[in-house]
Image (cartoon, rainbow, N blue to C red; front, side, top):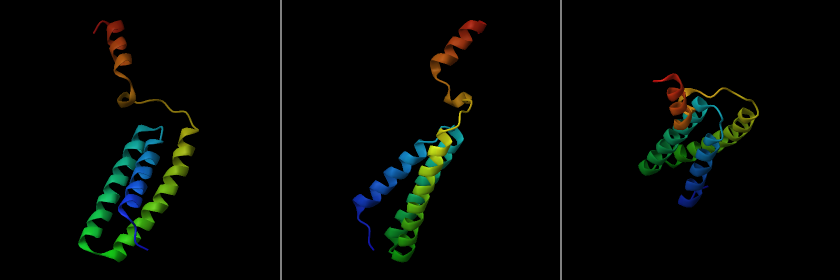
Length: 101
């Protein structure tokens, strides 16, 4: 089954959206990077003309999407402490002013 460009872009966008649903910064960054790398590999297979590897990559991307969606919703159910990278600039600025830095 051949996949059209619009279908492939929709799968890519949905995967990026699923990666952004993670509350934890490290998970969010990992899945975003993994999604981007996976689709670059799939695109290079398509350009090389390897249809079997392309179809296998698409199937793996669909399976990965469903896993990310489940894990993202599970991750959002549990509270966590925000790390420094997630803190807003305003809260950092207020902290510095209070301490006289």
